[in-house]
Structure formats: structure tokens, C-alpha cells
Image (cartoon, rainbow, N blue to C red; front, side, top):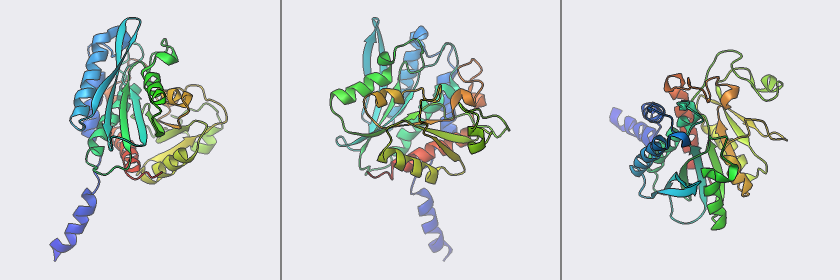
Length: 304
């Protein structure tokens, strides 16, 4: 009798996989603890990061490739993994894998890339996704000296537009690892936001760029439903917000695609962001798991 009642419970608990904080930590450590930074100035280490992402994607998808392009006689590459149907509508989920300067870039943005790799593992277990998900690690996303049209995300977004690929929307992961419950740890572009959202850096933020539409509304609603133990705050300002509005999502918005940036608000919270103390020890892998699970649970249930 005990077994009879226990079996349905076990089945319900294992119906959907969950992200692993140990896996997330492993990927962040591997990407951020190199001898030199993964940047255009240290091309060998930038390419090592790309190879690491490709190798991990390949564990979970047979459709993995480099999207290569040349800039000033140097070859750069995005890393793309696809899950779900070969044809039909797509959702794009992306994160840049390069860093600014000589920062280890744990939160910026090894955290986002680790999330991509975990999503590839989790989504590979779902056999009947109604649409295709492209997981993309971008090059040159964090280099302020590179023009917008030369960034990896722009190259990918333009390729979608050039081939008239139908895209439901784009999710950009940019800094999903740093959280804190310390009072007054959270800053904002406008001071009145503190009265609306509190002064602790214990939430995940969504930057909803205009125009919005059905995709943004569904993503916002479903994220709040599946963010277990984690507060979700959506920012949809009338004007672009300095720093908070920056990121790879802008490349897709420029092509007319709907975007949602998923972020811990970066330097508005994380004082280590883009500095040499942005190390893997500073991240909260439990709450990173919550973010990845939130995205995963939403992707497997999303309906247009």
C-alpha cells in the first residue's frame, strides 16, 4: 500500500528535470578561471571558451555549429545549439561569452552562458517541443569598442532577418548569478524605483523593450509563475535606461523582433561587475538555479 501511494509522488517529482547548482558552478569556474581573459585581446582564450561551449552543447544536441564572421582580418564565432523541430517558429535564447577587459567575468557573463548550457541539457529531455529553441553564445557582446553592427548578436539577428526566419521572441541572459539580501544593496536608474521594488538585490529583473506584444506578456506572466522562491521585477520604461537597457537583445530589437532581457541589473547591484573581482566565489548558485528553472519551465509550456 505504501508503494502504491509513493509511486505517483515520485513520478510527479521527476516529470520535469531541474537545473544543477554544481553544474552551473562548474561551467562558471571553467569559463572565468583561465590564465588570460576570454576577450578579443586574448583570442586564444576567447576561442577556448567557444570550444568549451560547443563541446558541452554537443552532449545534448546533434545540431551544434559555429557561426563565423571576419572582423579586421580576425575570425570570430558565435556558438549555436538547436533543440526541438527543425522547421517552424523559433525562440532565441542568448548570452555573450566574451568579457570586458581583463575581468574574469563570472557574473558578466559566464553566469548567462552557464545558464545556456544547463538549458541545453534540460531541454534535450523534452521530446515534443512545439517550436524550435536556438541557444546562442555570442562573441564580442561585452566589448564597448566594437560597433553594434560588428557584435555576434547582431550577426545572428541579421541572418534571421535576411532569411526571413519566423521568431516568436528573444530572451537575453546577461548577469544571472549575483544576488544579495543586504539592505541598500540594490540601486536603480531612478531613485523612486526603490519605493516600488525595495532596496535589496534579491530579485531577477526583466527589461521589456518596446514594442511589447503577446510574447513579452506571456513571458512576464509565466516567469512569475515558475520563479520558485525568487521575486521577478519587470522594467518597461517609457525611455531607454542607461546600462539597464544595454545588451545583446538590442541587436534583435533593431531587426524588429520582440525581446526580454533577463538580468540581476548588473552594476546597479553587483559592484564587482566588469572588474577583476567578478569571480565565481561571489555568485549565488542556488538562486541561479531558480532563474534557469524559471526559464526552462516557461519554455516547455509556452504556447503562442
